[in-house]
Amino acid sequence: MYSEYQHLIDLSDYPVSWWKKVVDLGEEIKNDPGKFAHECDGKVMATLFYEPSTRTQMSFQTAMIRLGGQIIGFDNPANSSVSKGETIKDTTKIVSNYADVLVIRHPIAGAAKAASLTADCSVINAGDGGHLHPTQTLTDLLTLQIEKKTLSGLTIGMCGDLINGRTVHSLCKALSMFPDNKFIFISTPELMMPAYIKDIIKANGSTYTEMNSLEDAIGQLDVLYMTRIQQERFASEAEYLAQKNTYVLDKRKMQLAKQDMIVMHPLPRVDEITVDVDDDPRAKYFTQAKYGVFARMALILTILNDKKSSETLRGKVYPGVCCKNPKCITNYEHYLPKSFIYSGDHTLLECEYCDDRMLI
Ligand code: NCD
Image (cartoon, rainbow, N blue to C red):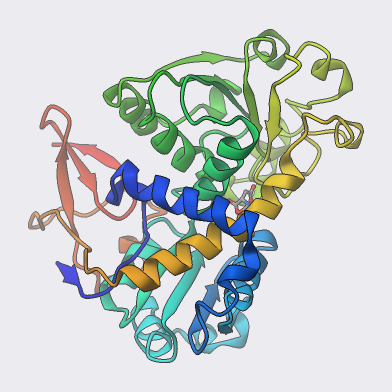
């Protein structure tokens, strides 16, 4: 299936050269934002946020305003026709006729892909459940390029809720495409990185190890990417409480880290980094959030100027086969065409919306 508009649902839909182009443009904008102040004069961006957000939504809105464009949208679906039971298909179809680009965040995996099937403008995925968050990854790549001066040869520690954290999923997929990056995943057994992400890392030729102690890992790292335990994605309060406070980065642990290690975090922080770490020059999470505006300005410009078409679904319908992931959009919006791709050794079918795999 094809769409005549260019979308960003998953960074893997584009070659690394495309991401580099966006990141380099982000750096150029950071160095001279005024030069781009009228690039989107007369353009409209719609933000459809079905799930809470501070940074992603506001940095997108700021990005469009700083490019000279205007913004519309909702951040509380209760105030829109969604509360009357409107489908993603209908909301997207309507709003995409009011805007040049549509930015969507949704609690269910695959929702942005679903939106791209019917939108009459470009769609950008601003986070779909625990699945992906490609624009946070562009922000993270820009942060690494500016603060570490490289995207290769890094030892990256990712710590916290690795099973539910969409930011770390997208970032692993991206950084494993650059040479000589090594990952150290620091989590409890319950919150380990999903198998499909580890398989992608291996297939891309990068390596990973899994540890459960932040103290033991921190001295080896060039980058420590902390994450919040994603309370809203747990089945029960008790399961969340069992994981809460497992990993806390504090001043004492920072003493074990290299002098040039940087600390990143997509934010919001709950209690996984103590506030006294904020004054350490290696703490880059607030700077990272600031760079998010430049990364999103670069993305909006690229998407609107390139005017390319996109392949929205590449897989096939297998009669009678449905995705088994209860958090997949195809199990909520039943009109969506199912689409599966053979993965790996052809014993698994992968849902094209949420990447969940099932044995065949
Ligand atoms: C992240 C998200 O929404 O996935 N935040 C963000 O976009 N800056 C991380 C999180 O919510 O923990």
